[in-house]
Image (cartoon, rainbow, N blue to C red; front, side):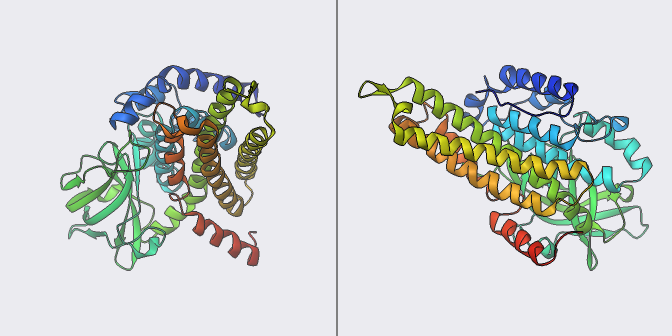
Amino acid sequence: MDVDRLLPTPEAADLLALVREIADNELAPRVDAHEAAETYPEGLFATLGRAGLLGLPYPEEHGGGGQAYEVYLQVLEELAARWAAVAVATSVHTLACHPLHAFGTAEQKERWLPGMLEGRRIGGYSLSEPQAGSDAASLSCKAEATEDGGAYRITGTKAWITHGGKAGFYALFARTGPGVSCFLAPGTAEGLSFGKPERKMGLQAVPTTSAYWDGALIDADRRIGAEGQGLQIAFSALDSGRLGIAACATGLAQAALNAAVAYANERTTFGRKIIDHQGLGFLLADMAAAVDTARATYLDAARRRDLGRPFSRQASVAKLVATDAAMKVTTDAVQVLGGYGYTRDFPVERYMREAKIMQIFEGTNQIQRLVISRQLTTPEK
């Protein structure tokens, strides 16, 4: 089922058509094999980069696509409907580019940003630590300035890094004295190593790892923003990152709905298509309503962002609504397919496994409820 989208320009409609073509030709034929074998799709992100899909919401002057956020998120949704791991990694890459774009100097942007936005370097986001997930202020990984001030020595462990060991750069957050600072860390730094990929429930084709910094030196000119400004930089990107995950979750839910509807139109019982049985038809109707609602919430937040209006609460609502919807819709899709849905011969069991993490990363849904409740008390201005 094609999504009937309301796009702001004819150019955006052409872009979405291109994305669907790439997703159908490059992602859909490969996803099952790579997810089953837990193998990385070498070369795929380079393909997305050449198509201009890895820097869409950033300015054209730096190599980006100059697209509105509402357009970029719908691109993510189309990718996620074919391959959730690839869409999530694309969202993380976009998030990792944010510190340099928003807080870097003109010289830093000129030097590094085009290669990042054009996809020549894939990015990872290195904020979480084993003991510091939602509580980012508890970071313990240290960045100590050398005596001559020309570099920082990084020591500590980071966790839950999407594209860990594969990325060309990492937006790294480490403690500098009492505060936290942000660094554009090269993926090949001497003294940087990575753990084995986590044994995850889903999203198997793109690794998630820990990173071990054993006194690695990073040139001082790779610090982004002022020393001690790291948490401000990290938090400034979180709302946009949450919208990325909301879009990915919506695409995943749409894929599950499509699979369930297709099966319900083919399977017959008691002489009728199962979709014509009211009990199942109503279940599918609820699934469709959940997907439409998820899409509407993330687009509302994105349009506020594009207008320069506050959108933090709306981003948390979108992340909460879309990821809860993805969990319910994928679970119901398994139910529609019955015993077949519980086998790996059909993709809905994978969709269900992939949906769970959507409720956890970029701030758990309990954190989203905390953000929303706080803003009911102190509204955004």
